[in-house]
Image 1 (spheres, each protein chain N blue to C red):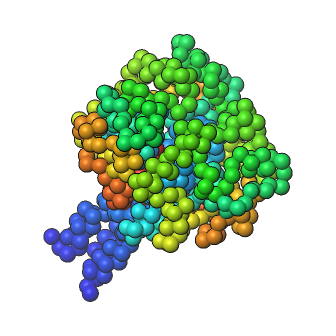
Image 2 (tube, rainbow over the protein chains, first blue to last red):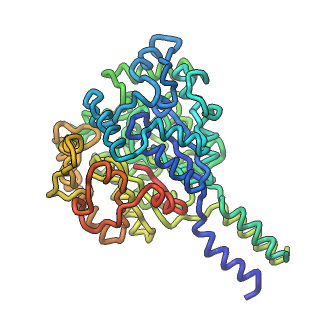
Image 3 (tube, rainbow over the protein chains, first blue to last red):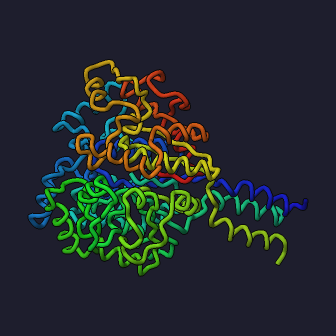
Amino acid sequence: MTDTEQLGTALAADRAKPKANKLVIFTWGGDLDKVWPTLILATSAAAMGMETIVFFTFWGLFPLVRNDVRLTGDNWMQKLLSAMHRGGTQHLKLSQLNFAGAGPAMMRKLASDHKVASPQELLELAQEMGVRLIPCQMTMDLLGLSREDMIDGLEEPAGAATALAEAQDAITLFI
Amino acid sequence: MTDTEQLGTALAADRAKPKANKLVIFTWGGDLDKVWPTLILATSAAAMGMETIVFFTFWGLFPLVRNDVRLTGDNWMQKLLSAMHRGGTQHLKLSQLNFAGAGPAMMRKLASDHKVASPQELLELAQEMGVRLIPCQMTMDLLGLSREDMIDGLEEPAGAATALAEAQDAITLFI
Amino acid sequence: MTDTEQLGTALAADRAKPKANKLVIFTWGGDLDKVWPTLILATSAAAMGMETIVFFTFWGLFPLVRNDVRLTGDNWMQKLLSAMHRGGTQHLKLSQLNFAGAGPAMMRKLASDHKVASPQELLELAQEMGVRLIPCQMTMDLLGLSREDMIDGLEEPAGAATALAEAQDAITLFI
């Protein structure tokens, strides 16, 4: 074999399994049991040295709303919608077993007893570890949310095209 | 460095991040809040020049059923199941905040006020943009659906193996 | 063109679409309608010759609990949580249309009439086909589950980092 042939063969074998060193999560669900895996996977990936991006869209946006903010839409519809979903990581529900709030409290207690970080701690950890947190512009528009309603440390709001462009060379999960 | 070495080095750096120019979405959820991100992501990807495929399975199949069709299964079970889920994009529910139909109407109104396209418009746009819409054969069999019950512009029904083969060189999302 | 240039051109064209020959599913949902697509996709991929890994986390862990085991946590919270979720594939619910148990029975009957394998059969088939089934260590700790509470044929419990490392060169789905 010539050098060129050898290189070609080696590359062909290798090329079949290129390893992504990047994780892009599309977080759609705003419930506690969706936020938790999002942040555990994001911080784990960051700890492994991966570039990590979380694109928060639809219900997924709610945990990024400041705890001291009640959403204030321009009209009665946004107000009703907002009233149902208090923002911030303190008020997250479980998608199952909610028991009028007892379920999430139970899960938090379980997690704390077993030394699993809370969503608030994981969110702060993610920010410290350089996980890029991007809120979905279209969802913010839809809900009448402005930059000031959101927690600090987020990147500029962006759309689906931005998220997809980042996803092109990444492990992708829709949570 | 020789030419071969230089090429090798350049390729090695590049190879780590091959960019997929294709998107394959497995759409499992038939609710309005799952159909919306599916179609927004699909049309965005198509606009970016990506080959885009949506594989509609399980509940995800319902929005592809013609609006004028009430599912008519062979037996009482399929009829009961069908009665619960009217097909087509006009009757989609939210997975949360349904308020006996008020929630989806609210979201549609919000979307329309903010110039976000409706699922029906997005579905037509996707078809015009060449997004490949593939219904899951197994789900159709399970629900007693035939080709005539489905909207126009779909590809031939196919199975999991077809969807997975398309997914091998694509960004993948399960929504 | 020189040999090197030709090789470079050929590789550049090819490199854009490397085909993953591996599937990694993060199974988060424990309902029948999540377990089914997980196992159908996993067995289809294995039949196609792909290396296939399912990482069972959160609610997704429940179907792996032995049918003869009632979860026995260390404390009242785990007991309450466990009581709500009987383990094993016989008790899986639908996330929608549950009808106090009539929905899943209906789906199973439909599936059986149409010769679609049951979750139990698919799980056994997956094990026979060499699908690697990995339970999430953190979820097991959280729910007080030990290795003995789980069905046979699983790999050692592992964490998010292990699952992400496997995902780097795979098609990835979060179900």
